[in-house]
Image (cartoon, rainbow, N blue to C red; front, side, top):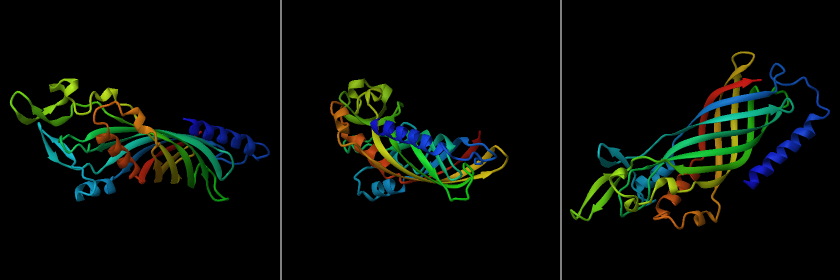
Length: 266
């Protein structure tokens, strides 16, 4: 969280520095603040192709009734809520928060397991630039940010391949059919979030459809870094290495995301 506090402090100092001595004839129809809501869509192509090719030594399984079949998840989705202010015609600052939803195949070769549903919350302070003749928040802009994201496994009634000591056979069972001690990764609610640092570049276009409302679309490009001491939060949990590395790998391979939504100028 220290890096986020430093980013927020730097943005605050920038506001003070740019506010003094600036003329007030900027902003979209004089409106300098904005509120933006976007839907996000991306495809984990690299992650899936490495799994399918066998390079990553992971098989993805999806639910088919009470059984599992080999299946890949090709669409990640989510949302962002952003707010910001134009400090000059072509300079602004803001912050975005949101959640992504994805699926990850645990890499335990001894247990066939349904893909885990993962939600990733992110918070990213950012600075926005446009050309000298721009009138932010309208038009094309380049946004740069640094922040963090936290990925949590969702509690669901997953299916996995379970060895039944009474029948001496393998069978597919749901989580609610066995005790917590028999779950391959323990109780999901006890698993902490996996966090990463995020560097963001966002190419965004806002096209006005009224004096207050704009259609927004663009692409987010991200580079992510996993803290080196992350495993210390997981090493007392059963089989943590089978999902932690996969969650980080899938998220780190998610470089490009398309977003589209609406911006309200205030």
